[in-house]
Image (cartoon, rainbow, N blue to C red; front, top):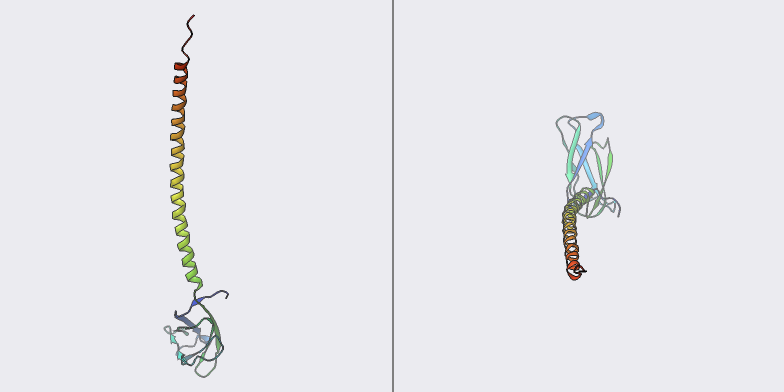
Length: 151
């Protein structure tokens, strides 16, 4: 299915820079479905200018998977720009957040394993001590079992 930059049923911000940063324009957006048909449930809408910057913004919410298209232009039809929006059941940002969550959990697991390794090392040291004591007892038992010879 390829890379999806937007998730279905989440709003998508449309940004348009007017030719020559022209301010005070009426900027129209036409939305086309992934099938290439103009979306009748989305009437054309206008964008709102940010200050008097010549940059216009608005949003729409796709309700189906696929490649959506927005044709953006001034109300006289000039300055036309076409933008595509790839929409899926997930988006790149959502996947990134999920990966970060998994990485965080892996870090926690690594920390727990490190703690277990430390405990195993401590147990190994204790076993070495116990083995040393058993060897000492065996030596003592061996000397009891073999009393010195009297001549």
